[in-house]
Image (cartoon, rainbow, N blue to C red; front, side, top):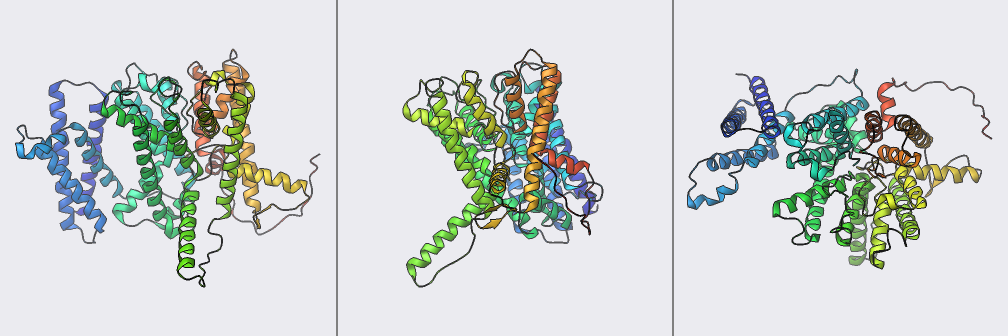
Length: 583
């Protein structure tokens, strides 16, 4: 048998095994069926391990050391699972009881599938499909697959309708957080796990995971794929694409792990029964917070009697969604800046005559994001505290008022968690939240909105025109005309989408107030997840509108237009310019 045929056989075998897992977890079975399903898993893993070993002898090219280590880990895990399957485990091998659980079998099968999928040759015709279409298509496929999983009988305690499953899946993939049913009480542990996976894949983008693991196992990638991923990862050089992908994935998992540990330690001892439930709660909220999803297993998010005054937990959540919302390019740039500053101080200390100089370590993009984010957080905190001091903040201590106000200023920028009664907010506070939701997070992050840089460029342009300048300048740099055009295009398109959605929902659900409808549409477009309490009571048509708005807000209307319209090549001519009357 050829190597390509063996690889193809192994892939389809792993694919069928994943289908069996979906059937196993999604439906109820008797003991006989579970016995046969378990045997299918071990048969699949046995054949899979044999094919992996065989391919080492048939393969002509050398595999990378990291791939060999990965395969060794899979073989070791499979051996442990095979030993743990033995009915009578010897006393000296008592540790195998820890692995004698179906969860480890699922992990082994899924890992085997990811390994085979990543080594498969999937060719995309770049002449027919551009990167924008591929990006949008990946989200559509993930949403539809998530809808299918959430409709399985074992995913929820009650039958979930198609539109509610589609709404929940879209909200999770688009990291929005708007819900039509309570996540903690309506969905089972399997359903909540599906939502968590959708949040993680949607937050970073399924293309990020697929591209990196493909490169990890194959050790190479086409030039077209690297060009496409260069824009996705905001890399400066094509050769840095997969290095940046690796950093993004490692940084994400590291922050989420640290966040889960802090959340776990901030919980009261007997607040959540069972160590597993406590761990799952911590992981779920850490991933949801960093990905700016806003999903919570609590009925009223953090506005629960047991969590309302847990300021340590709220500070951890704030840190997570602020880190997720400022963007990976800024985090990497800040890392370079602090390393440079440390080296500079070290060199100056050891030899005062020498000077380590690297100009513009903190680039213009990072400076604008830091200043804009800082101003929005400070202004939002002050305004929230001022308007809600004797209202929703009345029951909190002075320190608690600060934490809750900071939370209220940060969460509208696409995080979606709430620690106050949203329906009890003053009208002036709601107006502030409108603005913060519309601005949203920073580019290259897990958040939505028009982005902080867009808002900053628009503000700078207003000031530049008022001063009579013919260009926008900041930090001794001139902003390009293309950036300014994109900024105003993004702002205009966002208002068109939101305005259309408000009009449609007001037509479908005329009994609802315009304020609550507009709040819902702004929240959906900016993938925030905050609501004034009308999401569950929306009609089917209005839910479809919100689904469309959430999707458009996640992939951006500009990306959709790029995917639909044929790009015009650079023109080698210019028409005479004329001024257009504005006022």
